[in-house]
Length: 359
Image (tube, rainbow, N blue to C red; front, side, top):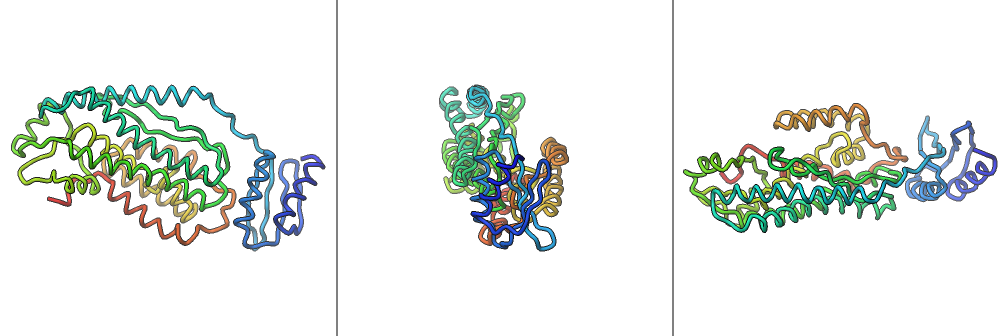
């Protein structure tokens, strides 16, 4: 850092905090400050420094508080056509998947035109994923965090069972503190879950019923898989009157889209790695417990048959275990701490279980 930058930085910091002393190396300026309650002022300082391509970290050593300031290179904006191309490709793979699933369903019970059902399926599944990412985007904008547009990931229709591998957004800003990390983590799954419940209710309503004695035989004949449901999905099926003695519901493609939505919510809410639930756990408990909860989540995934996902989390958690906020000193707010139990409860309610609460 040159002298003018050095003086400018000290001037900016002194407008927020009382400077006790400072020490400068070729790459980092370390400034000791005297304040203890620094959460809100630190957020303002980070935004100010970010505009000057400077990054500020807050650390505590032996009851002393330090600001560590260094230069950083903002991530380059990716080509704008990439998210659009991926979105279009995902629409195509989901449409193809929905069309052939509608044909399979019609081989059991005659239903609507497969192309029409494929459109509903696509709107439902893309809507769940899109609103999930929109939730993250709204929370990010609220905290003035720069992010990319969603990157939808096309899957393998029919044969691969998964028509899309979901979507993601890339952060181009800095996660300042645990409260912001928590808010961004929880916003997506909650938003997506609300849409999944709506889709599940409609999907259950339009799904046909067949006698229980014929259900297994018809499913084998059509090639459809019998999937484990979740408590939330079972509840929506019950509320629309489709839980009838001696009758089985044939999952329409729209209801299947909701099933995918609940599965995605369950996986995302696991307190592991850099999943949404992992961000929530990291913000709530810190590094040590986040690591333990990651291993516990891997065990849950393996025990429920999601071996590929378990391996995926295990491999990537070794390379980039978590997201560390710039201010890792300030604790999570009490209101947010209390919400962690709610998050785990939602994960359980969305999990595909080998039993139904209504049997």
